[in-house]
Amino acid sequence: MAENGRTEDRIDIVLRELKLLRGEVSSLKERLAHLEKTGSAGQIEDIAAGRTGKTRPSHDAPPSPTPSPLPKKEKPKREKKDGESLETRIGGRWLNRIGIVAVVIGVAFFIKYAFDNNWIGPTGRVVLGIVSGLGLIGWGQHLYRTYRIYAQGLIGGGIAILYVSLFAAYDFYALIPYGAALAAVAFVTASAVILSSIGDDIALFIIVLAGGFATPLLLGFSDDHQVSLLTFVVVLDLGVLAAAYRKNWKIINFLAFFATLIIFSLWAGKYYSHSSHLVPTQVFLVIFLVIFAALSFSYNITHRKKTSVWDLLLIFAAAFSFFSASYANLTPENEGLMGLLAGGMAAIYFGMGYLTHRRNAGDKLLILGFYSVALAFITVMIPIELDGAWVTVGWATQAAALVWIGLITRSRAVGIGGLVLFFVVLMRLIYVDFTVDLYAEDFRVLLNGRFLTALYVTLALGFGTVIMDRAMKAVPRDTFRKVSGALLFIAAHLVMITAISAETYDFFELQRIAIPVAQGDADRMIDTILYAQRLSLSGIWMVYSAALIIFGIAAKNRTARIFAITIFAVTILKVFFFDLSRLERFYRIVSFIGLGVILLAVSYLYTRFKDSIIDLVIGDEEKPV
Image (cartoon, rainbow, N blue to C red; front, side, top):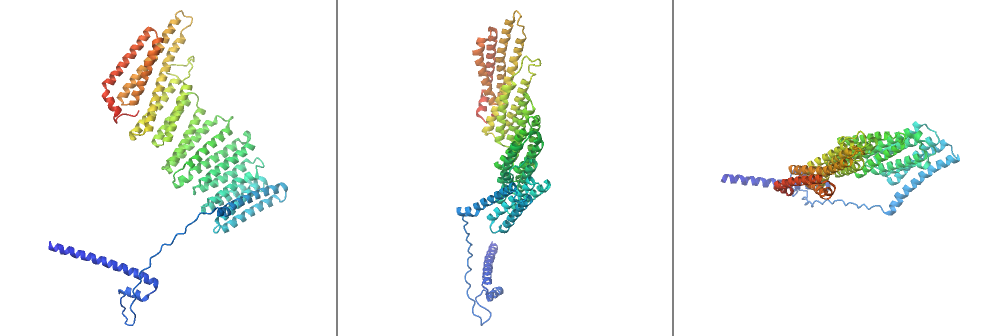
């Protein structure tokens, strides 16, 4: 034990000595660094030789002075950057912008005025404009590093003047061929994109873009040059698309979209002719759609960034603007193509949604945006391509798909869209599909469009109910899913019981119609059929309710039991207040006895399983639907 104690004491002493040595080394390093700054060579030699600085080896040398404490490093104070004053903004920014806009407008008016008065030849006007534009660009580049805001206006104005000159050279004066003009405009646009991207200068790009789109507006549409005008716009839009791959400049995207829409609308309002412009107009519309569809997601996919609401707005605006313009262009002669067009649009946006899912699966908002547009076009396509009950079938399928997609993507908005579409399906089913012609030769009970459509809608609603039920298992306290599942369940059974009632009613109605009026006992036979018709409805409702009660107990489904009791209540009211006065004595007896027997049977079931039902109602095992 004593030996162990001595060992531990020795270890402690060694550790203390090591700490002292580390402190001495740190002190020597600090002194050495200080002396290197002050230039004291003698003290540096002492430290290097291992001496502490108290004495020197030479007898003639004076003792080393005690080193002064190291000065503390002061952190440089950050200069406060004051925001631009109103005076600075007006003088340095606003006057520059207004001035360059005025110059561009003046140059455009000068070219047109010179053209009208023949002051200068066409070649001279264009050359003068190009030289002026290049001069402003060169001057702006020279001043860019020193006076960036001022230089932005010069460069943007110079590029805008180039646009004006090149557009006039081809469209007004026919000095250069179409290919050369297109190449020149593309080169100017590419230069503008490069200059703006290198300097990360959105202000410069806005000036350039505004000048480019303003060119045809300033010069006016001198003639119906659709191809040259819209090609000029396409080149500008491609420049915006090129910038969008590197810069997330949403304001640029919207500026290009609205400028394109305005120019196209102005041209169409002035020159559009259905007979001569149909094909080229549709080609340009497709090009514009592709550009702006790519604009809405190119940056997000390239850089794996999340989509914003503004991106979705551009997606919706581009898609539905294209479809509206195409509808106006293709109808009425080609109205049959509109369903194909809507289907093609749906396929395109489904494809873009899939591409986004592969490249940037985390961007659920963009994926849902593409899929929502695709489903919207399917909704539009269905009534265009299909007739009658097929419209209801198509919408019911789409509604079920929306509910399902909303659940798997956890998007409440998509799920609500599915529920709203289901409501539209129910309204159409009631007011359109339930109307049948009993006098038609091909009408057959249970084998007709009404019942088969109702059966399909019931299955679609049932599908929605099942997936809601499964979703509730994952999130038991989700009120939205619980209420939605209950509504879908009730709607499904309402459709089914209504369809069965309608088929039963028409079965007897067909028999009544088939009775010859001239037959002697026709009135008695008609009354018998009417009594059976009324009684059958009560019987169907009672049996359906009893079956639903049994299902509700077996499946632990509270909604089914409550809905069954509601149907029972309606049936009791019908028997007591309608059958009692409208039915013959025999049918009245059958109605009451049948109702009583079924009610007693249901009452027995509730009594027999009341403890289980109470546990289900107040416990945790109860199914939501």
